[in-house]
Length: 81
Figure 1 (cartoon, rainbow, N blue to C red):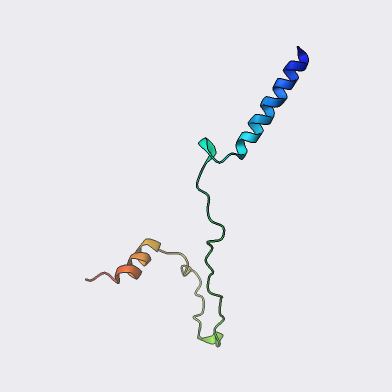
Figure 2: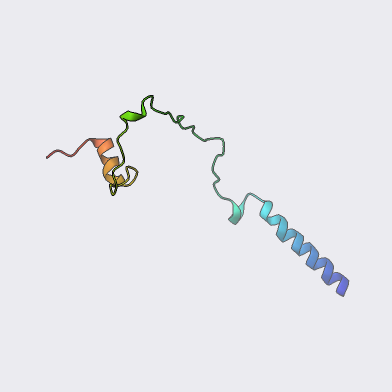
């Protein structure tokens, strides 16, 4: 009796562990394509660093701001007044 229980338990455990290897049913999902990665342009350093604006204390960072407004302006131009 005990040997049958151990054999049945081990086989059920093995079947449940191997069920995760399948690609159909509940576990099937879309996966990203790891080969469809775009390359970004390399960073460049300006030839003359003195042409860059000096940072101002307390000024907002250029990266921060209204991204939605910047996107709409880039797509459709500045709003007409």
